[in-house]
Image 1 (cartoon, one colour):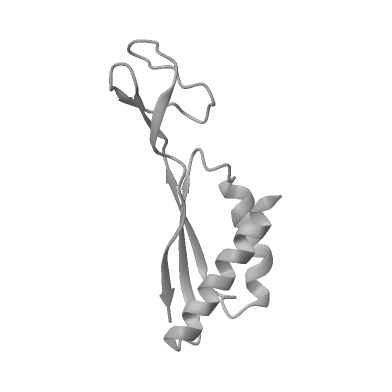
Image 2 (cartoon, one colour):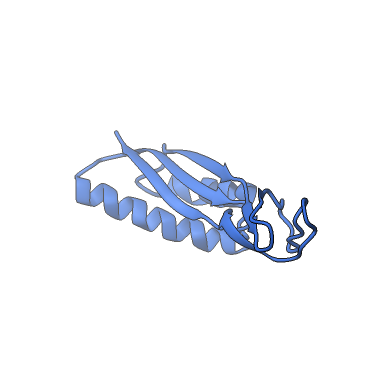
Length: 114
């Protein structure tokens, strides 16, 4: 489960930012996860819940913002949501292949200190 490694890396960054800010506690951690990122939000939440109690962020609330995938057809320029699939078929012209505009995100977007 690579989500544990992601959770550990994110928590290290959060704790470093807390130390830099002189904060005693972390109140909230907000992550943005794209539908095509390859990260399972439930597994990531589980991993965070496993490691948070042993850290200075023990009482932090974890929020996960899910980002829907958006692709643009290379043939007709239609923007559409392909869903969590590897096959990008345009629903308008049926062309295969697209440019992914959103959905690969895996970002730490906010840390609230208390």
